[in-house]
Image 1 (cartoon, rainbow, N blue to C red):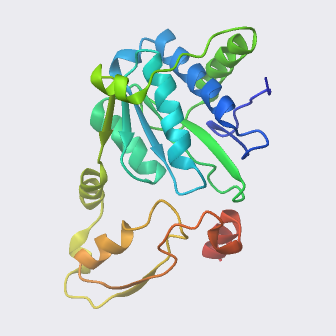
Image 2 (cartoon, rainbow, N blue to C red; image 1 turned 180 degrees about the vertical axis):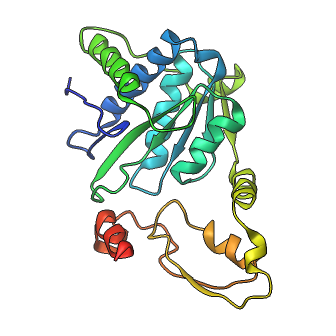
Length: 235
């Protein structure tokens, strides 16, 4: 088995070369085993995913493994930004979340980010324990799986929508009065990613004149790297 190492609270690798469905299942099993060892299993696990290639399929693969370990899965219905997945952990009082994303890495990469029960970044003491579980699997441990239809029948799988709740939460942490009586024109660029439909809708609701660009799924990010988009936005 490929030696899988967690970086910034997750594992990222090139699709097909290292990030395969088989390795995805191994990481999902390690996370499920970690949750069982920390008595977080009864709280369930949220699974979210971004707009990268095969993200929804990798999310479903993780769901089968997590449910196979007797842990309830809350699968987000559509591609979602990582903060929304983290918010779903708090909303559902879940034991953590898996986010299928490679963040700023090039389009050919995919990744699995683990979000602990406190809905923040996974610290090294968490990822170290997950890597220990990965080693146990490499040493002959089993990967458990369950068909999602059967998991649903057993109450171990549920598709959830969190968009409205998350948008309402965003409205609670901004200052909407700032926008009253002002004519503000905004260009929103979600960069083909999972944030499509959030900021533009909120700003429109606050009375802004909004133009949105790059607001459709493109697994190649317009022929550029997500990291390059981020650097351009920071200039």
